[in-house]
Amino acid sequence: MPTERLADERRDLPSPEHLAVVPRDERTVDLAGARAAVAALLTALGRDTGSEHLADTPRRVADAYVEMLTPRPFTLTTFPNDEGYDELVLVRDVPFHSLCEHHLLPFHGVAHIAYLPGERIVGLSKLARVLEHLARDLQVQERLTQQVADLLDQHLAPRGVGVVLEAEHMCMALRGVGVTGSRTVTSALRGVLREDARSRAEFLALVGVGTGGRHPGT
Image 1 (cartoon, one colour):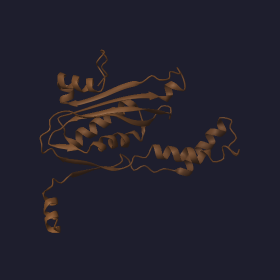
Image 2 (cartoon, rainbow, N blue to C red):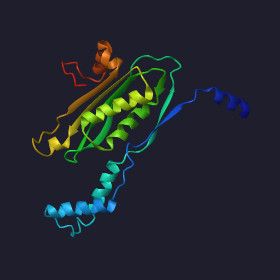
Image 3 (cartoon, one colour):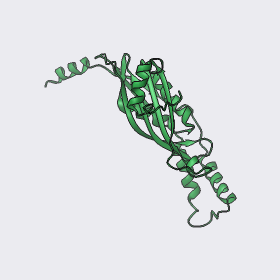
Image 4 (cartoon, rainbow, N blue to C red):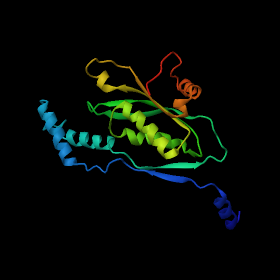
């Protein structure tokens, strides 16, 4: 194909609109201070940080927390909804993990993220990226659920958004009541998926919530 013709055809393709998503805070990390704090905690717990097994633990732990708490910037790519698609777009069982801000222990599970397109549609992988970006923080599940829904509602301007998170919390499994295998379910609904009963029921049925009388709080 001639180069000129290929260039003309590329110009005819719909151009994506790029909406940059950046970390919420420009946090300054004191890595040396974090490592010293881990060493002090181990010492306070009666552990010998001079032993061969623990000598490098403060560095490893501090580096791990920095990685888990640093959101990675990305670009939320949207495209014109030229075909006028007006049915539900749902990505199910997206794995995620985050850190409970009360105990600094992880909670992990799966998310179901859906939207009813308006004038634009979004690259499907970006739905998972939104979740991953917001999960890299000290979180509670309720807030994380709402943040995902709010970000999509704000930047995508869909007719509706639905987010359901199902997660197991290590602060329940490893301490206190010691319940393993229990999952907490939270949801956030925006637009039509909150206001219209049939659309809401369709979304919750597709993600397996509400079929037995369960209905997560919004």
